[in-house]
Length: 320
Image 1 (cartoon, rainbow, N blue to C red):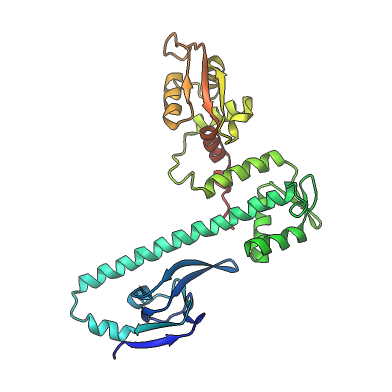
Image 2: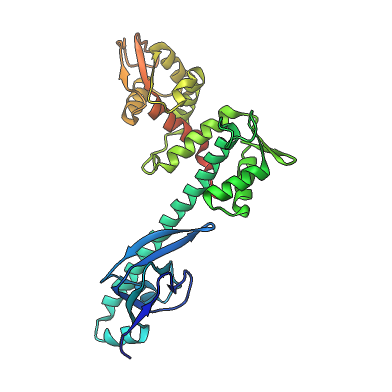
């Protein structure tokens, strides 16, 4: 069987996501877009023009289509079916086709990771918008002051602005209720602790910006230390670009309280490597556990907040 060429009008689908068709396409003229469904909407993965090839993965590995293909304008494409393709590569060594199939598998896994990140971004956007709806100042965004919001209004706005389904919105509300950020009172969403919700929103914002893609978690003792210092100086947990100087003695007392078997000098060295200490002034009398320090330690808010928020909320990443 020979490859065939076919004309398609604008907005025509060549195949849909999850179809079991196995043809490969070559664009001869026109424009094709590759899309994938997320929630109630589609995202564009690629725009293809003359000479581009698409649909090859399903042809090679026989799995369902991972995306949809739709014409943007009137287009002419050459179609190669599985039988034609395999008859033409019949003389290719088996190991070569194994490499091709393995490559397809890696591409599919990469696509799934991308979809997972996109899905999580939508979940994060829902949470950020809900916080804005609860505590925003603009009349068209905030339905009521003080962290109280009509479920119906919140749902309508989220569906309209983000294109999510009602089921997904309800999943978001359930997720936040389960983690005690909000609760429902009849037909209203209530947030009793704006400060805690605000910190969680800051964490979600950092996660959506991929701030934690290469994050290395710290140990429990150092985590407890950072938590103790953060309780004394709450401002350092806000990623606002600022810095706070704290007395060296206070820092060392916190080390002795939360990490008594740790050598203060080693804790300071590690936190400096993490960027959690920006500057150190004063002199140490010695390096023992009883070491005394005069002067101050400078804590950068952005790094401190990033680590603190991760330690506090990393087990509450949305997966709705």
